[in-house]
Image 1 (cartoon, rainbow, N blue to C red):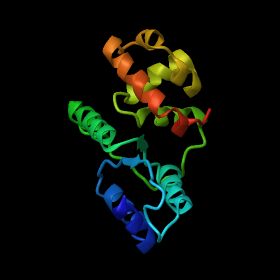
Image 2 (tube, rainbow, N blue to C red):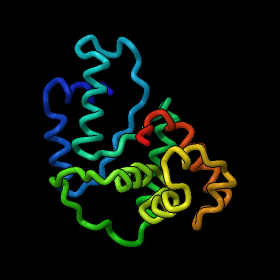
Image 3 (cartoon, rainbow, N blue to C red):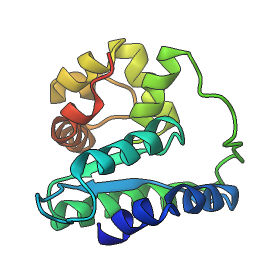
Length: 170
Protein backbone atom coordinates (compact mmCIF):
# COMPACT_ATOMS: atom_id res chain seq x y z
CA UNK A 1 0.00 0.00 0.00
CA UNK A 2 2.90 2.34 0.72
CA UNK A 3 4.16 1.98 -2.86
CA UNK A 4 0.66 2.70 -4.19
CA UNK A 5 0.41 5.86 -2.04
CA UNK A 6 3.91 6.95 -3.12
CA UNK A 7 2.91 6.67 -6.80
CA UNK A 8 -0.17 8.82 -6.15
CA UNK A 9 1.92 11.48 -4.39
CA UNK A 10 4.74 11.58 -6.94
CA UNK A 11 2.33 11.45 -9.89
CA UNK A 12 3.76 8.30 -11.46
CA UNK A 13 0.73 6.04 -10.93
CA UNK A 14 -1.02 6.70 -14.25
CA UNK A 15 2.25 6.70 -16.23
CA UNK A 16 3.06 3.24 -14.79
CA UNK A 17 -0.41 1.93 -15.66
CA UNK A 18 -0.16 3.32 -19.21
CA UNK A 19 3.28 1.74 -19.77
CA UNK A 20 2.16 -1.66 -18.46
CA UNK A 21 -1.02 -1.64 -20.55
CA UNK A 22 0.98 -0.66 -23.65
CA UNK A 23 3.22 -3.70 -23.04
CA UNK A 24 0.14 -5.92 -22.85
CA UNK A 25 0.57 -6.81 -19.19
CA UNK A 26 -2.62 -8.10 -17.53
CA UNK A 27 -3.42 -5.64 -14.77
CA UNK A 28 -5.61 -6.15 -11.71
CA UNK A 29 -5.57 -3.91 -8.67
CA UNK A 30 -6.09 -5.79 -5.43
CA UNK A 31 -7.00 -3.43 -2.61
CA UNK A 32 -6.79 -4.43 1.01
CA UNK A 33 -8.60 -2.45 3.68
CA UNK A 34 -7.01 0.94 4.30
CA UNK A 35 -6.12 1.37 7.93
CA UNK A 36 -6.68 4.87 9.39
CA UNK A 37 -3.43 6.70 9.95
CA UNK A 38 -1.60 4.62 7.30
CA UNK A 39 -0.07 7.80 5.93
CA UNK A 40 -0.01 11.33 7.23
CA UNK A 41 0.88 12.59 3.72
CA UNK A 42 -2.32 11.53 1.96
CA UNK A 43 -5.91 11.12 3.06
CA UNK A 44 -8.35 8.28 2.38
CA UNK A 45 -10.34 10.32 -0.18
CA UNK A 46 -7.23 10.83 -2.33
CA UNK A 47 -6.61 7.07 -2.38
CA UNK A 48 -10.29 6.39 -3.17
CA UNK A 49 -10.20 8.96 -5.99
CA UNK A 50 -7.16 7.26 -7.54
CA UNK A 51 -8.84 3.86 -7.29
CA UNK A 52 -12.03 5.19 -8.91
CA UNK A 53 -9.99 6.74 -11.72
CA UNK A 54 -8.19 3.44 -12.33
CA UNK A 55 -11.50 1.55 -12.42
CA UNK A 56 -13.49 3.97 -14.57
CA UNK A 57 -11.01 5.81 -16.80
CA UNK A 58 -8.45 3.03 -17.18
CA UNK A 59 -10.98 0.13 -16.99
CA UNK A 60 -8.73 -1.63 -14.51
CA UNK A 61 -10.44 -4.41 -12.53
CA UNK A 62 -10.40 -3.71 -8.79
CA UNK A 63 -10.67 -6.59 -6.35
CA UNK A 64 -11.17 -5.94 -2.66
CA UNK A 65 -9.64 -8.14 0.02
CA UNK A 66 -10.00 -7.94 3.77
CA UNK A 67 -6.62 -9.35 4.81
CA UNK A 68 -3.28 -10.58 3.39
CA UNK A 69 -4.49 -14.20 3.51
CA UNK A 70 -7.52 -13.32 1.37
CA UNK A 71 -5.23 -11.41 -1.02
CA UNK A 72 -3.00 -14.49 -1.40
CA UNK A 73 -6.08 -16.62 -2.08
CA UNK A 74 -7.32 -14.18 -4.77
CA UNK A 75 -3.89 -14.05 -6.41
CA UNK A 76 -3.93 -17.87 -6.53
CA UNK A 77 -7.33 -17.83 -8.23
CA UNK A 78 -6.16 -15.22 -10.75
CA UNK A 79 -3.07 -17.30 -11.52
CA UNK A 80 -5.17 -20.42 -11.98
CA UNK A 81 -7.52 -18.63 -14.36
CA UNK A 82 -4.72 -17.10 -16.41
CA UNK A 83 -2.68 -20.30 -16.72
CA UNK A 84 -5.79 -22.38 -17.53
CA UNK A 85 -6.18 -20.61 -20.88
CA UNK A 86 -4.73 -22.54 -23.83
CA UNK A 87 -4.61 -19.49 -26.07
CA UNK A 88 -3.16 -16.04 -25.67
CA UNK A 89 -5.70 -13.33 -24.88
CA UNK A 90 -6.70 -11.20 -27.84
CA UNK A 91 -4.76 -7.99 -28.28
CA UNK A 92 -6.59 -5.05 -26.79
CA UNK A 93 -6.50 -1.37 -27.53
CA UNK A 94 -6.72 0.58 -24.30
CA UNK A 95 -7.16 4.08 -25.69
CA UNK A 96 -10.80 3.71 -26.76
CA UNK A 97 -13.70 5.60 -25.25
CA UNK A 98 -15.46 3.60 -22.56
CA UNK A 99 -18.59 1.89 -23.82
CA UNK A 100 -21.95 3.44 -22.95
CA UNK A 101 -23.54 0.00 -23.21
CA UNK A 102 -24.66 -0.81 -19.63
CA UNK A 103 -25.09 -4.52 -20.38
CA UNK A 104 -21.51 -4.72 -21.66
CA UNK A 105 -20.28 -2.84 -18.57
CA UNK A 106 -22.08 -5.31 -16.30
CA UNK A 107 -20.59 -8.24 -18.21
CA UNK A 108 -17.12 -6.72 -17.85
CA UNK A 109 -17.62 -6.42 -14.07
CA UNK A 110 -18.40 -10.15 -13.94
CA UNK A 111 -15.39 -10.96 -16.12
CA UNK A 112 -13.12 -9.24 -13.58
CA UNK A 113 -13.83 -11.93 -10.97
CA UNK A 114 -11.67 -15.04 -10.78
CA UNK A 115 -13.46 -18.17 -12.09
CA UNK A 116 -15.72 -16.04 -14.31
CA UNK A 117 -14.45 -15.39 -17.82
CA UNK A 118 -16.11 -14.04 -20.96
CA UNK A 119 -18.26 -17.08 -21.68
CA UNK A 120 -19.44 -17.65 -18.11
CA UNK A 121 -20.24 -13.97 -17.60
CA UNK A 122 -22.44 -14.12 -20.71
CA UNK A 123 -24.18 -17.26 -19.42
CA UNK A 124 -24.78 -15.64 -16.02
CA UNK A 125 -26.21 -12.46 -17.56
CA UNK A 126 -28.42 -14.51 -19.89
CA UNK A 127 -29.75 -16.61 -16.97
CA UNK A 128 -30.21 -13.85 -14.35
CA UNK A 129 -30.43 -10.59 -16.33
CA UNK A 130 -28.93 -8.25 -13.72
CA UNK A 131 -25.87 -8.14 -11.49
CA UNK A 132 -28.11 -7.78 -8.46
CA UNK A 133 -29.87 -11.07 -9.24
CA UNK A 134 -26.52 -12.79 -9.81
CA UNK A 135 -25.16 -11.50 -6.49
CA UNK A 136 -28.33 -12.66 -4.71
CA UNK A 137 -28.50 -16.06 -6.45
CA UNK A 138 -28.23 -19.16 -4.30
CA UNK A 139 -25.61 -21.84 -4.87
CA UNK A 140 -28.36 -24.00 -6.37
CA UNK A 141 -29.40 -21.21 -8.77
CA UNK A 142 -25.79 -20.75 -9.86
CA UNK A 143 -25.50 -24.50 -10.52
CA UNK A 144 -28.32 -24.19 -13.07
CA UNK A 145 -25.97 -22.16 -15.29
CA UNK A 146 -24.13 -24.18 -17.96
CA UNK A 147 -20.50 -24.66 -16.90
CA UNK A 148 -21.01 -24.27 -13.14
CA UNK A 149 -20.86 -27.31 -10.84
CA UNK A 150 -21.43 -27.41 -7.10
CA UNK A 151 -17.85 -26.54 -6.02
CA UNK A 152 -17.56 -23.73 -8.53
CA UNK A 153 -20.99 -22.39 -7.53
CA UNK A 154 -19.93 -22.35 -3.87
CA UNK A 155 -16.68 -20.52 -4.67
CA UNK A 156 -18.48 -17.99 -6.88
CA UNK A 157 -21.18 -17.40 -4.25
CA UNK A 158 -18.55 -16.79 -1.57
CA UNK A 159 -16.60 -14.45 -3.86
CA UNK A 160 -19.69 -12.46 -4.89
CA UNK A 161 -20.88 -12.19 -1.28
CA UNK A 162 -17.49 -10.88 -0.15
CA UNK A 163 -17.41 -8.24 -2.93
CA UNK A 164 -21.12 -7.27 -3.03
CA UNK A 165 -20.69 -3.69 -1.78
CA UNK A 166 -17.86 -2.92 -4.21
CA UNK A 167 -19.90 -3.75 -7.32
CA UNK A 168 -23.35 -2.22 -6.90
CA UNK A 169 -24.00 -0.70 -10.35
CA UNK A 170 -27.47 -2.06 -11.24
